[in-house]
Image (cartoon, rainbow, N blue to C red; front, top):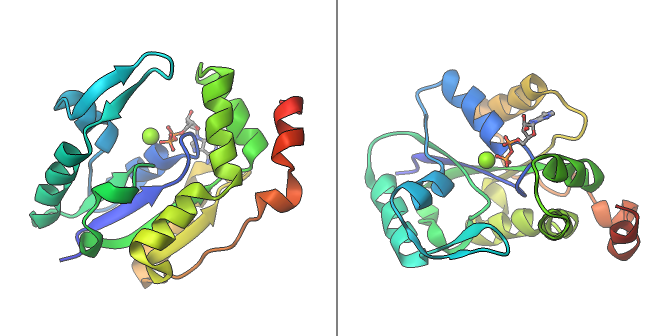
Length: 189
Ligand SMILES: Nc1ncnc2c1ncn2[C@@H]1O[C@H](COP(=O)(O)OP(=O)(O)O)[C@@H](O)[C@H]1O
Ligand SMILES: [Mg+2]
């Protein structure tokens, strides 16, 4: 059964915010893999330099597999798409995008180090989450949303429309590499 809606995208693009507004208006329950990892200790160690836990992939995968067998409808906001997720259980992946300059500022405002903010900005420029979702789930289950300069409710509306009409198979909306040269951008930020 496909009981999972995935919300993916680089950290800072607004996954948690969208998940909250979607779940407030539906019977979907939010499961944040990041909090599962912390609460249930699904990690192998802590990376002090990056201030993140190193996920125990096997444990997280087994936990998500159990969730995907449940009858609950689940919204999963996460940038950890890859190897952890039982593909058949995902109905649709919403991939949120954000202009890299705005993203960088948001991550710095969160108190992230320059290095960590830049690593993630670079991943956004290079479409990492979008490509992962396309590879894992196939392009037809992927729906990309450019959130740049859109309010929370505007992003919600776009996501809700995709879910309610079952419209999927949309990607290639943005091309940050066309607009920014990563080497130049890193120097100006
Ligand atoms: N559409 C939006 N416009 C402006 N700010 C937003 C928008 N969506 C989220 N934010 C803000 O950006 C920050 C990151 O959002 P969050 O939902 O935590 O992102 P993620 O879960 O992808 O890391 C938060 O401070 C949030 O309030
Ligand atoms: Mg989040």
